[in-house]
Amino acid sequence: MKATKPRIIALVVGILVIGTASLYLAKFLTDSSTKRSLRSVLSAGIELFEKGQYEDARAKLDECYKKAPKGDVKNRALLFIARCYSAENERDKAAEFWGKVAENPSLPDEHAEAFYCLGTLQSAGGAPEEKQAAEKYYKKAADVAPGSRFADLAKIEIANLMLDRDNLPGAKQILEKLRDEKKDYPQLRKATFKLNMKLLFSPAITEVPASEYYVVQQGDTLDGIGKKFGTTAALLEESNGVNPLRLQIGKRLKVVT
Image (cartoon, rainbow, N blue to C red):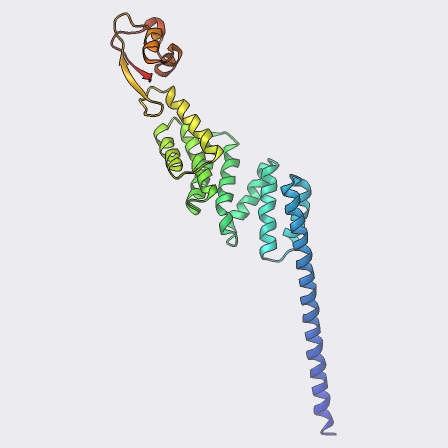
């Protein structure tokens, strides 16, 4: 009888151990199966996003984001949900999800993209306070990942905002630095063209496009000055804000050479 009791205890303990192990094994297999299933759904959602089917993509990405535990699948779903809302021009939802990306410590490589997109969402509003908020986001994007694509794009947008305020030297400094670094973005070419147009029609002397001052002499006309320097009367009028019928002797004009 004394020998039987320890055997019963050992048997009960063994059953409990086996039962517990079986439960953990079942949970592990279930979790593994769920993760594989969610990864498949995530891949399908990303594929739909790349095809431009944003609403269908979000349906799958939302499922991943809600069901997946903390980790890569959930983080990737969050990122692509934000990208979907941006692509669909859903400003409020895009701002909500890009804000989550920016605050997610597990997505440090995407923080510059998040801040840049938050900036573009603010810029789309057009109000002065929204442009100020946009510039703050662009500066964060430029600072968080120097040299990255989204940091460069953010700098270009900062330059555009400066151009809107007629801060031509500030914009010129940013854009020239990017060109010196051999960066080549459509946005950079567009901003540089915008800068050159503003420089062209401003009274400031510039190296590019090349210009110099000319002092109006007795008998001068804008047409005559234009022919002398290979430019046009219209450009002289626009650059200097002068009335061609009231041209003053001794007035200094900017002429593009």
